[in-house]
Amino acid sequence: MHRRQFLQTLNAMGASVILPASAFYGEGASAITATQTPTNAVEVAGSDWAIPKVGVVALGGRGSAIVNKLAGRLPYLGLSIAIDTDVNSLQRVKADRKILVGDGKAPSLEPQAARFLAQSSLPEIADAVAGLDMVLLVAGMGGAAGSGIAPIVAQMLREQDILTLAFTTLPSSFGSLQRKQIAQTGIRELRLHVNALLPFSNRNIERVAGENASFTSVSSQAALAFDQLWRGILNPVCRPGWVNIDFEDLRHIILSHEGDCAFGFGSASGVDGAAVAALHAIDHPLLGRSRLQRASTVLMAVRASPQVLKLGDSMSAMRSIRKQLSQDPWIIYGTYHDDTLDNEITVSVLASGIRAA
Image (cartoon, rainbow, N blue to C red; front, side):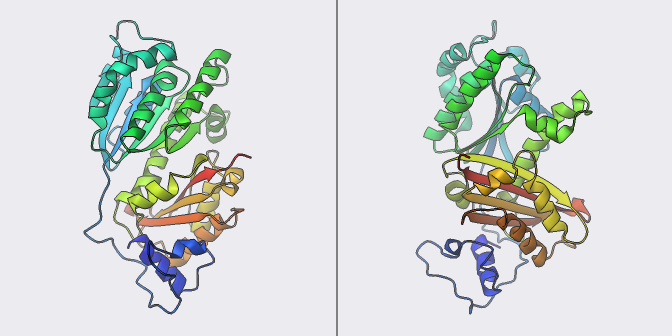
């Protein structure tokens, strides 16, 4: 069902305390009253459901490595594009389109030089992304492609009115100070042009993987986080489910707020599984209670098998999220079934408009 129908149902059931009062108003509509007849809360979206065309743009070796690891596993992916100054790296990446910046003979190590070279490739990049509604940009910051090319690609996407979310990795803790400074400069410039930015730091990797984790496990953490981010955002938007999220809501409410963006996910089963999964998502290293408390908008997605999820579970998960919020934010909610989960319930939380501490 569409999100507004679900809001009407919750309001009719007396659940308005979960969502801000403003959530019960549509454009040009009056307030929904509690005397309205509730609609069925478990209903598949209609055939008129519009699916946005989504692309992923991988910049540099790190971005390409993440996309390679997830090749063939990202649902709803309309187009994959790889951009790099290194011809050998481009040859190894699995992408629908590959764009070489420069001549490839001597890959630039300086972000400013890479940015200058990329200017001549912008028409080709613009042609590649034409027709996309949304792009998830993946880059490793600190090198030529991530810190040098990513900001101007993001600027071009913004000029084409393509909703853009950037997922970036940062240099390791034992990397050079110069590389870290380049990464921070690139992050500041990239933040000016994207709708939302999620930096995946080395500290995040250490907290998720643990000190005794193998290098293989550590290198997989960024790809796993990006995979969960992708599904957490796009499943409620693209996959007809019990409660779907309008793409325009995603554009204008979730990712257009000023401030940082953060994402967490978690799973649980058994009694109060949805509430426990929501708490795991809140405490995920990529999110955390401190960030969530400062958010102005929250997108929550719940995934479970048809036999497991009940309406009460969803409401319980929303209450768990709501308790952590220190202001009256928008809470946008979606839920869909997944027969592969058995008894597990998975909750993902995207918080945006996070004010500085």
